[in-house]
Structure formats: structure tokens, C-alpha cells
Image 1 (cartoon, rainbow over the protein chains, first blue to last red):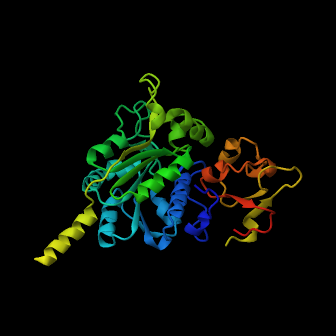
Image 2 (image 1 turned 90 degrees about the vertical axis):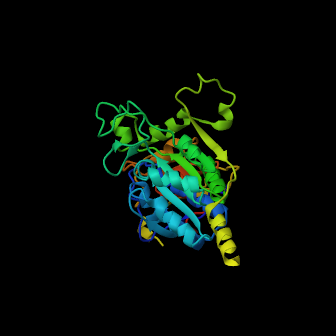
Image 3 (image 1 turned 60 degrees about the vertical axis):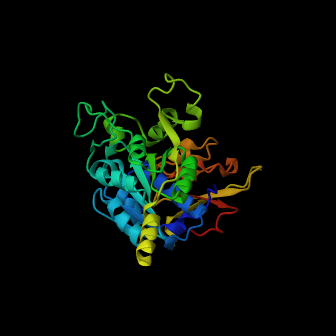
Length: 274
Length: 89
């Protein structure tokens, strides 16, 4: 994929820059990947809609020059469902954080996946609620420190991939900000996929999560993603012991099912014949 | 378009390289000095100056891998082809 594309044509860089995110935050890297993927697919920016919720990730829609909606906490998927239903020709990207998408908007996430509506949902997983001050999120690993768990988190975290898979999402993938080139390709495939696509991106949060857990600088956290993750193809030849404590990345599910907007179109045609 | 004050341009033409000549543009107003670009570069193209901003001191060593520009979280780094001064952001 071409790297030196003019991403600035997709950004509102004259009004909204510099970005609000902290130094070394991975959200900007994901945004760059997203723009390169949209550019590679040759989609006009007027035909792309971006819906975001609240939180650090929610600011993404502010910076892009698509049709954008910045919605309420956890309800990005609900707004996006309505948008897609009214304007099915738009490529709709939904940007959520781990707390926004899986905790507060968990119910909407489950049912959007079940319906299999043609949206591309991005889950920025930084293991914590960043903007609200570092509370425990559903993806904070056990034992890790957060502002609401100063002596270590006693809850179990859940795996976004397994949740999405179980709810019926037809494209489920995970990428990292360190491997942004692979992420570009995953996002491009996810956008082209007809059906509900979930792309979880592991992004470092050096200011809150990194500081609470003493994970080092932004650079250290970014580099540690290389050691902590293993691509799915490589993991097939490895033993369970070697995979202990590692996170798998790649495309987990890519299948075809009935899509909500298409089925609705058929229903309308059936009703008009009667 | 950015104002001229935000642009800092660097190129170097002394050594010969098998790759096309590139220069870098660092937008100081957007850069948050995280240091990702200079740490990830395997050819040490960048050096951090006393204020913490990356300065491309050896752009001739660049092998165009694109690690720095794709991993810059603030879109503050841009690779340009050819001489500096021909480029406008």
C-alpha cells in the first residue's frame, strides 16, 4: 500500500489541528491507517460517513473531512445504524473506544453485530478509560492498576474478538499501531466487506495506562506491542506454551451472511408487489 | 494551507544514495515530541534537538521504509521528494 499519500486532503488540518491526543497516543496512528485505507479504495470523501462516540477515540471524527457525527457516549453504533439505514450508499465508519463500545455501548454492539448491518466498527483498545481519568474498562487486564483500582484490578477482562465472533459479526480482525502497514490492509478489507466488520486496534495510552502501570515511555509501549503480539498465521505453528500471554493479531472471521440493508430492500420490493 | 512559520525544511545532498533523494518536513506546531520517529528509524535519520523536536540530520540514509511517517501520531512529519522548497503543505 502506498505510504506517502497526501493524507492531508482528508483532514481538517486548517481548523482543527494540532490533535488533542497526548504525546505518543496511538489514536493518531490508527487515524492515519484509516485514511490510507480509504485512499487505497478510491472512495470519494463525500461518500464516507464517520460516526464516533465519546472519549479519546470520539475526537477522531472532528479531524477528518468526511461526513461526520460526534454522538453520545456508547451510542455511536445506534446513530450509525440509523444513518446506514437511511443512506445505504454511504461507507460508514464507526469509531469507538474500548469503554465506549464495549461497556457503555455493549448492548448496541451486540445487537449491531447480530443484525449484520454493513458498518465498519473500529474499537480503539487502550485498556483504560483515558479521557475520564483512568477508570477500569472491560479490557483492563487483571492485576493492572487504574484510578478505580489502585491496588490492582480484581475483575477479569474480556476478549473483543470472541465477543464479536459470538454475537455474529461477519468480519472480525485485530491490528496494532506498531504494525500500521498490516492495519492499513486489514482496514481496507474490513471496509470492503459486506456486513458488520469489527476491527480492534491495540493502541498505547502512555499518559494514563502507561504511567499507572509503569510501562515506560510512548516509544517503549509502542515497541512492546511487537513482543506482545503474534500474527495469526505464525501462531498456527506454535505451541500453547509459546503463545502464553501473547495476543493474536490478524483476520479471525471473514464470512458472508444475510445483510440487514439488503434484506430490507428486498422486503420493500416484496411489499410493493402485493 | 499552513503558514510559513510552521514549516521547517531540511535536505542534505552530500552523499550519494541508491534511493531517491528525500527531504523531510517537520510541522513543529503539531509535533508533541513523543520521539517515535527517531526511535523507530533504523538508519538514524533523525536527531532530537535541544527542544525535543526531531531534526532530519541524515536524510540521505533514508531507505524510504515509511516507518516514521506512518507511525507519527500527529501527522507532523512529511516526506517530500527532491529538493526542499519545492513543496507546500
